[in-house]
Every structure is written in structure tokens, then in C-alpha cells.
Image (cartoon, rainbow, N blue to C red; front, top):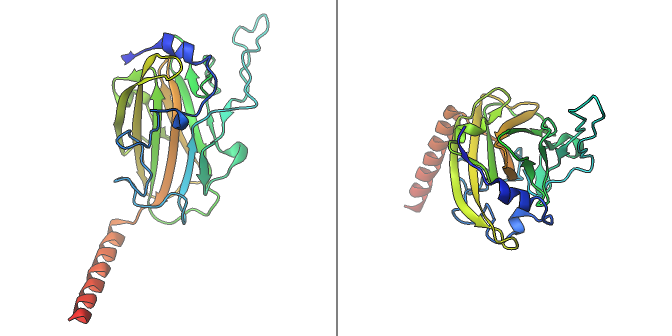
Amino acid sequence: MSFKLLTATIAAASSAGAMADVSTQGLDPYAAGAGFARPQDASWGGWVRGEGNTLYAEWDVQSDAEEDFWSGTPGDPQGVFGDRKAGADIGSYGVVTGASLYADYGANANTYISGMANIFSGMGDSPSSVTVHLEPTQPAVNGPVRVAFQMEVMGGVWDSVAGYGVTLGDSAPTFQALTGLADFTHPQMGVTMAVARYLFYWDLASAQDVYDIGLTIAGGTSLTQYAVDIAPVPEPSSWALMVAGMGLLAGVARRRTR
């Protein structure tokens, strides 16, 4: 396990006032060249977020009213860590909201919501696991679908994208890549830390009733922002028919022009 660990920086950041990453100057993952993209603008996309039978959910400011910090008793050194699930705050479409749309970080004794409103994996070398859970509200579509997951982490950055162990259920991504890496200097604290953005997507033969995306972040790392986009993907034969149809229409238009 090899990664850049800035524990002192993250420790200080966790005591700061809550703020949205997208509203922090210099920390907008959708800025040109920063690493995030909406599906209507992305090479991996081709659909419009929030239209038709697409699915979407995005998290930025993490909060959990039921968060339960350690409440151990003598003889029970591990304590109880309760239901710790953060709801999607930026927006969602086509998925069940409320308690059924969440990022679950409750399996880790050293993981909590930081003062910067991020999911923070506590000090030390122990990594933390997070599960992002979505349930569609509309009937499953026929044919293949593409599931895209984008995430931003701050602090401890794995040397390899494979270090995050991202899966959809038991399936490894069809594609995964680092899409952006920069040093970010906190405007109030004046400290600098690494910020990395990643893209993962899966091409599935058919839609699912539930989508559970699992990942692991290093100790001293904040999971700061992440988004899931899902849409039907035409089968190759459908693409061929579509292209042929467009060619036929173009030919008819040329004849009419003549």
C-alpha cells in the first residue's frame, strides 16, 4: 500500500466550518479540465442528465442526522457506531430518495463526517469502506445500460486507481481512470493538499433493481464529492440500424434538395 498521506492537513481541516466543495474557490470538479463531466458533455455519456429513463444522484455536502459517534461501555471496547449514511444533497433523478438513497460509511470505526462536510477516513494507515446505494423508481429498461461513477478525494491519494477497489456489486469496472490531479490550497487555512478525481463505468447486459457501488479510501483521506449517472445504451445492432436510418434520411434530403 503506497499513497500520499497528509494526515496533519486533514486533521486541521476536519475542525473547520462546513463548506460545499463546489462553492469553494478552486475546488469545482466540473471546471474545465478538472476531471468531472456531465453525461451530455462526456465521451462516456451521450445522454442528458435528468431526462427520460436516465438515473442520477450526486453528493457534495455530507450530513447525517443519525450519526452516532463511539458509545462504548466497559467491556465493549469497540463501541456502537450506529446508522451512518449520508443522503445525496446536490440532486437526484429517477431514483428513490430519502433513506433509500445514501452513502454508507458506518462500517468503519475511524470514519466520520469532517468539519468540511466530507466523509473522512480517520488518522493512521487503516483504510475505510464506503457503499453508494441507489434504487430506481422506474421500471427496469430492456437491453444494456451504462453505469458511470465519478468521485473526488482529498488528502491521501492512492498511487494506482486500482487501489480504491471500486466495484458495482461484485463486478469490476469496464473502465477506470484518473481524470484530474492537482494540489489545492485551502483559502482559509492556507494549507495545501492533493485533490484527485476519477471516472469508473460499467457496461451491463441489463438494468438492475439496486445499484451498490463499493470503494475503499486510504487513512487520512476525505471523500469530498461523487456522482452516479445511469442510462440505457443501445445494442450494437441498434446503433447500426440508427446509423443506417440517418444515412437514408440524409440521402432523401439530398434528393429533395436537387
